[in-house]
Length: 357
Image (cartoon, rainbow, N blue to C red; front, side, top):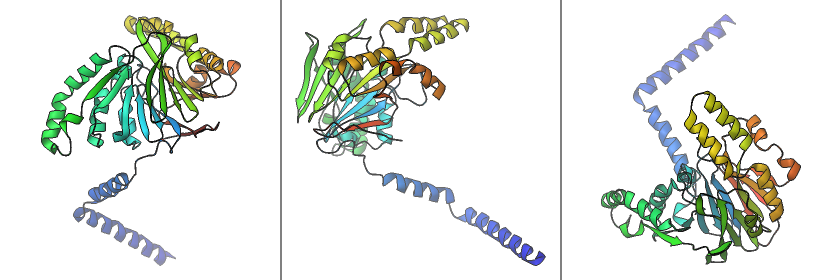
């Protein structure tokens, strides 16, 4: 028995020595890196939507307050093979890249309004769709003022594009294809047509985010299915009218109770500036309960909360955030997260929900 134990110990010592010696001559770290890189490079682009299907992917569900688990506001709409982005909050493009979304297939961007947390990643989207293979200028739709936003980003990133074309060549990165093109959506009433292409109808909806005027939401209709995205807004009856019968209503949500607590804590910590902001923002957003009431009025099948404010670091905070919602809307409510993906098969009543890691 003692001899067997000695042999086992000896074998272990020899193996450890052999591994140590091998590590001195073989670049194990690089071998492991090559293995991981090979696995990563072999991941195919994700298919967001099946042919003839309407889908929505939440690529950012945060409000301006920092949240390590959420990127800035963003939703990707897939109508068959056509992809469109609604808002480009900070960090949202990185999410799209991590998930292997085929960026070159993105045909346009719809802006709800021009707060920084909704436009911050436009320059990165401009770059990454171009590098991925986009070969036409990227259209950016929005309220009046979109011309200024597009001109600013085109100018700010012009040197970057010049450098990359010079480095990689005109054939790979044609300089004429990189730019953004503004498309103003004029609004004279409660709604306005924004796009009608390949069976996809997009309607802009006036919402109430004063002093931000105008601010829009958007409704997407495709093959008998519909998704409405509220944008930032206070509770607004015309939005419920425009969203009537939507399969999915993606609505912003802010807990004013929790924001009030946050403001009080900040004031006691002698931080008057952010405390004042917590006070000021309560009159132009919608609480979860109010959003549930809007969803009921719109007869939406599924309500998805986004633009979550304040950040929710624990499950306890999440429960506090949706407190009272079940009294108004017992079913058909989802707290959106980055990666929430909803499929709406054509000419059906099915709603398929999944999530990306």
